[in-house]
Length: 352
Image (cartoon, rainbow, N blue to C red; front, side, top):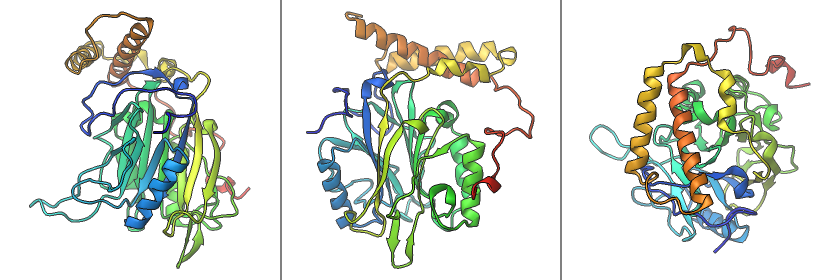
């Protein structure tokens, strides 16, 4: 059984899909460096088998998977026992008849304290929060060529965890879109729409030039698989590379290290972006009370604090409850509509 990250230790068991199990809040640097792979396996059993072999051989911590091969409701056959998965149920019509396959999932080592985000999870997008301090949001997404990118990304940005954690978000996406921003040789309409989303949300693109392309099939070779990272994570994505010839499908793997060593800014340091004068104190108190009640019911509070580590984890849990209540009760500061997240940036600068 593989280790956890490149410097971390053991942890609690993974929560169930409802996200109800209590998990610890360890400092982000505790996890060391996480080995991550992004893979579209095109719903192929042989490609899923190849992915399991690669993950075990390379001691991968997290896989952001698009078009997974799924049996039954949400079973990934052959998944090694060290891993757990986050995935949505099969899509159904109003009469309960299955109308398609899931288009994304996340596979991660069970020792990682991961909580699936039910609000952000859909047929084509799966999200989970790594319960570190500060928390990180992991997203796997498949955007079919027929999809409306603005509609899909609007669902992302309206979710609570995206609002809270987008500066620490990591997105692996088969975008079916072209842009020089992720090393495509052309730009299409879908590529421009994703460029706008990246700029508006203050994200960075982790893709780097490579002699290999992320897609290499009968329709040609190109780069349509994109890794996006929030402002606090983009510089922590290291050794980004395309892994050719092992996937048993038209998409090559994208692999990289997420280096979490060294301190990360605490969520509380983001307070300057909120308008304290407009805070709803009544709502703040109600949200704190609700958060405390949830923590008690889930087993996060109560019991004897018999070690320094137990005290630290209790403090982190209470801090996160207060911060999440603050975000709900406090509007962000208004900015002039002409201001961008990166004020000097414009799409016209990309070719430069």
